Length: 130
Image 1 (cartoon, rainbow, N blue to C red):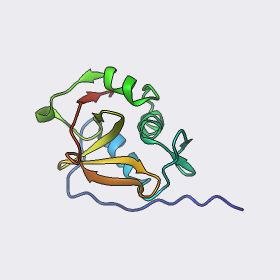
Image 2 (cartoon, rainbow, N blue to C red):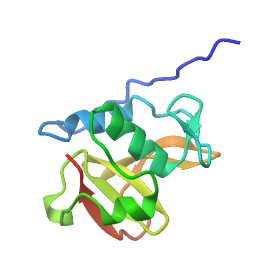
Image 3 (cartoon, rainbow, N blue to C red):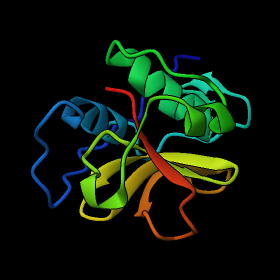
């Protein structure tokens, strides 16, 4: 069978500009694709840290692969200084900030890669890799 890449024209209600805009817009192209624990494919499935790692890699940026290491790498950014492309870290989870208080992330096996309010759970820290 032929693999089908599901991409969606998600159009956030924000203007993406600055160094992280390509990270945010690249992540949004995969909304609707599957979540797979330990997966490393944006089309066949990935988990949260794999999603962040693969999106950054697609933009030419090296990041750690696991959520705990992602929370300790890059540069610390305060919530008031967040820009699209920053990594929002939770305990045991990570996502990519897209602006307007939203993240794109590989959420769960039932919901896959999706957009959520960044405050859907308590934020541990925010890191910038770009």
